[in-house]
Length: 359
Image (tube, rainbow, N blue to C red; front, side, top):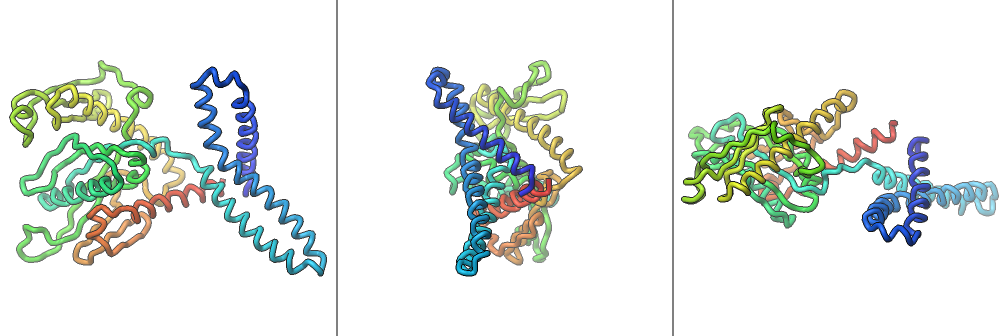
């Protein structure tokens, strides 16, 4: 391990001892908020410091084994111990580095999933419907709840645009790498000569923001319009101005909701989407700046970036960011996304580890 990582581990060990002293003080229990804060910090750093102490002990054992290897009587035994200790050190070092990786503060949050038809006309809208079903089935498998915020159905089926809120622990951590352009290659139902067409959809996965702490909005910067909802939804939805559109004037970002019967609920939902989009814009600006020095192999998640191809004639799905091809298109479109999500997360972690080691 390099000196920077060792220094970081040493600081964490010292901090753990300090936390133990503070938490053992009876006076700390009077301030429950501070007690919870310190307890949470301790629980976060204790695993990595525990591994570091084990790492230090194995290093001491390795020194002893090397000293023993000088004695012909114990050489074979000592060399076996040396090999075993080296393997243990390598394994523990990898685990420690993983625990030292910076955590994404949004990982445990709910998400807003936005799917928009791109090039390809009606076929693109149908593909948007397929993608929405894929993510909905995955959410169902994970025990998450899906709420439609707004939708613009296509005349032939599918969606020109659909926005949904997915509520579930860790939703963002599993689906955050889905943002980007998804391409489909297949024979459309409207194709009479059997030719394969290529269409695209864009997917955006936005973490649901904390309205209080993440984004501060000036009411003067907002224009709120109400209008009559369009499309299916019953007599009440179509006859009252329950739909709400909110425009953030400084950025031009717009969010609307027309799915609910209550104007108040629609306004709250539209505001949540607006805040998530503003936060996403801020985060992507920061990522673009960081990408000037180092671009992640998993990709930046930009909307224009083609990330995946769904090839129906060959029955395959290819993720271009990690060169992963799976010949199980039906299962994946039915919501079996774990293999893809895990591979993307593992690649992202590998890039982070490589960067940490280089520093």
